[in-house]
Amino acid sequence: MLYFGFGSNLDPDLMRQRCPGNRVVGVAVLRDHKLIFPRFSKRWNGGVASLQLSHGNDVWGVLYELSDEEIHGLDQCEGFTHPVGDANNRYERESIWVDFVRPADGSVPRRVRAWTYRAREANPSLPSRRYLDTVVKGARAHRLPDDYVTMLTRLPVLSEEPEPQS
Image (cartoon, rainbow, N blue to C red; front, side, top):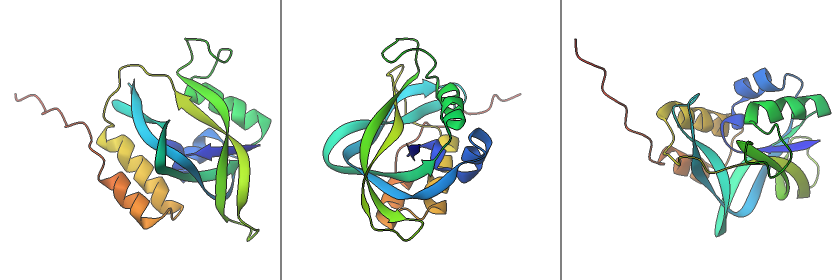
């Protein structure tokens, strides 16, 4: 099945850990949406990305081909472990339409349906530098549009807490 990754799952190393058999299908864009950071993650020590409807904006990402086993493993990683709509889910998995603009196999660009995850709001926060660096690393690895990568690099991040003086 197709999965649209747009946040930390853009990072090829992270996706190999989470879904070792994944196959990159190509670059895609979700029209009329923007990145938001509606949920604080202890793992990342800052906000994590999600999607919000926003006319005229685009979220770029990567389409991966995942097995049923891998998507269920990704469900666990993303905290989608209860039925859809259950307040205990950290993310909801949903089906979206994306424009598949740069197929890895040279096929014709087209509109496709893919799974993605949308975060449930819980303590919105700016992303940490480490999280945003992971997203940017993935965006560069997949050669997302330069203006989009530049936009990512300019997003504000949490200021680092000073280390205690001894």
